[in-house]
Amino acid sequence: MSGGSAEWFRAARFGLFVHFGLYSLAARHEWVRSREAMSDADYDRYLERFDPDLFDAAALARAAREAGMRYAVLTAKHHDGFCLFDSALTGYTSVRAAGRDLVAEFAEAMRAEGLRVGLYYSLLDWRHPDFTVDRYHPLRDSLPPEEAAGRDMARYRAYLHGQVRELLTGYGPIDLLFFDFTYPAKGPAEWGAAELMAMVRELRPGIVVNDRLGIPGDYVTPEQYQPDAPLTRDGAEVLWEACHTLNGSWGYDRDNHDYKSPDLLVRMLVQSVACGGNLLLNVGPTGRGALDPRAAETLRAIGAWTSLHARAVHGAGPSAFEPPPNVLYTQRGDRLYLHLLAWPLKHVHLPGLAGRVRYAQLLHDGSEVRMQELDGGDHEHNNLAPPGREPGTLTLTLPVVRPDVLLPVVELVLRGEGH
Image (cartoon, rainbow, N blue to C red; front, side):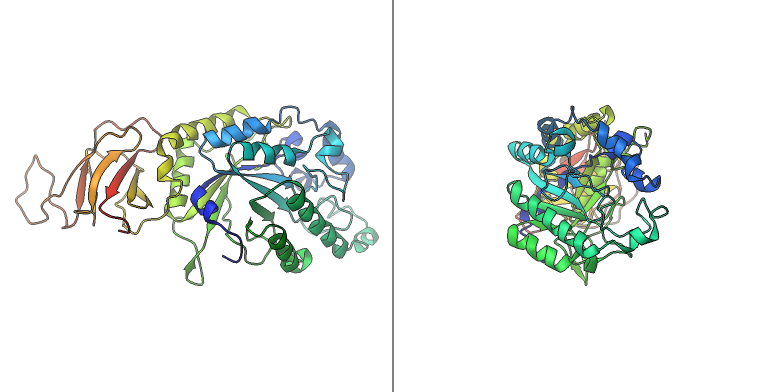
């Protein structure tokens, strides 16, 4: 940790990412302006039509809380430079376009549901007249050289710092900042990263900041891949958050139907917790600001699981015990949780847990799971009895029928904390 107080972040484990902006009207990926090398005039057709009449921050906050999420992050400004907040530094805002300060609505609604408030802010800005043209910029092949030469990153840097100050002083306590992103053409020097971070810490001493300024932050951000082990830096474990889309696009992408299933997303959440990380799961509201039906149903399905299994995730983390195949362990104090990735026939064998467990139950319904220690010695094969196991192995006897939940979980009450 280089700064903020991250205990809430570590305990939360699950958050909602919301990508919404002018690109939502194009409905073909949030990078549409860069991909199609649109001019300002080309892109302004979305500005002229921007009317988020179905953006209901209260409903979004409720959906996040009911899904089991404990914090939410909104794109205050994405790479296209369009701001979802009121800014004295530009008129390129949702307030000017539609009379709506969506950051204010979002922050108020999330706090009302008891969620922590995070804001995403892109370090890139394809609309600002001083942001220098590079390989990602939509005007990379069309801006006259003399115009490109007149751009000044120092002026843009002052704008960037000024907008972050606006966000941290005008919207109540912001708990998390997600900057995006440093790349070979532009890095900490272009952003004034050290000075920016110092300002953020001064304005919000307890804030949690990610690692994409190009200097160390409070946590690291694997994107679109799922770590299967704790993440480390210089041999020490670090806080991390895997950020994932539902279908491969962050912004609304009407024709992309490559959705992850709810059971896969729950497994990804549990794998994150088992490896000491968080999951930040994205939705991209439609051009009118509503969740598309598939996204809404996915959140509801995840919520049906978290409503029964929350304590295996929230406040939980990795366990020192070694799980058997097809099992993920999370642990919270004296409670060890077995997440069964594959449903076995009757028995699951847990090495090293003999004599360490007081009670076992299926978490979704609180029904007891019987347990025994099988003789570890050599014996003659018996057609009607399972073979012996290594000493120290605890064997659970499960029902034949798999519980009708996305991921079955057994809760073990350990004999004393700290095992």
